[in-house]
Image (tube, rainbow, N blue to C red; front, side, top):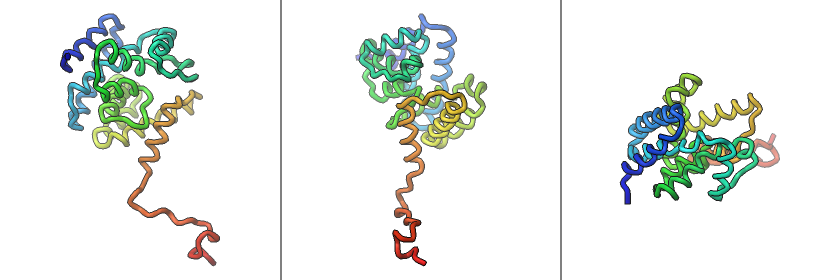
Length: 215
């Protein structure tokens, strides 16, 4: 069985045939992810493996992404058909497992869900998604990502929710469709953020529902 470092080198080798700009982006994400992982005491090699794998199919043409997704047996929504680039993470996760022999489920989940997020995400997946969104070039282009980056160093879940809120505003502003998978994840993140399990249920405000509220 290959070591994690050997797996990383095997994935890195795949970028030799991909655009230089994509490689530069992935290198920035790797550095960002390792920095964030160190702050959250995660295994740096596992995080780096996921970071190298996350955009392996990002540069493929839309028709190829739809074809590869179908061949991999992945579910394809109408939103995916409109924006096939959304499939590049799930495709990469399948290829990394089946062709490169990577079996780290959490690293593969990070690759699969780095574009849209998921209702349930291991820490590695949260780190990869956020590192991908606020790597240096994207921070320059979208200054709010600087604030999300600062927040991620204190609270990964709050940073994810802030990113999801920003994404929601962008989608509403431009008339873009929200992907069902992302919307499901966002609803869960909002519910978990606002849940206050330590307090008793809020009393009803209808006078007829509780005598304590009578005239």
